[in-house]
Amino acid sequence: MTSRVVGGASTAASTTIEAIDVSGFADVRAHWDFEADLEDSSGNAYHLANTAANQFVTIAGKTALASNAGTRLDEVAGVGNSPNLQITGALTVHVLVYLNDGLHSSSAYLAAFLGTGETEAANILYALQIATDSTLEYIHEYGSGSNANAYPELSGITGKWSLLTMTRDAAGRVLVLYIDGEAVWTDTAASAPTGGTTGEFVSEDVQGYLGQIVIDADEQSASEVLAVAQQVGVA
Image (cartoon, rainbow, N blue to C red; front, side):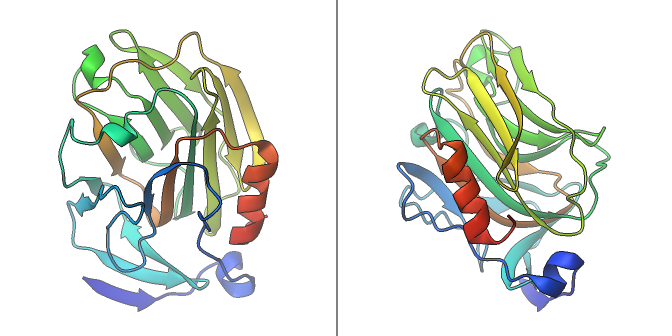
């Protein structure tokens, strides 16, 4: 493991970034702050393993894990061993990230719960990702691989810290995506996600620095998401 302090663009020069304060969140199922390790501080012990050597850097006061194309984080416990993350209803996912490049060579999972294959047991229950056409995407699957998608534009957030957030209602269908506390897309899926019993948490191919990921089994309101962005220092 290595650790260093780096400079940055506008965020590093003018703003100190604070870690997300989860103390008021309703039902935190996983929380990785990447301050010095890949451990889950939620109490559920969903610790992560890295396919690359861990390298931690500090940008604008926030320590983060360096990530590149080919970097994959997944659960130490392995597939099918994280029932508290098999969420099909109300959900909020926050990802505090410093992206080097919005145009990725392949789709990058910022935060996802998924399995391998096209069976219902391997369905994606939630995935916040960056596509190759510089869009921020949300995906979940129901049945045997049917998709529910949302695609807002992803622009103006590279070279600085950003808070990327998705929320989902208790029925598992109403979806909202946020960038720095501002709602940028709302959609209603045809069905809630199903299956996912052989899934695990994954973050993969993100080109930049992962500062924090929080999985909260609660639908945070627009005002609550904005408050988080303001507390962090990106809004």
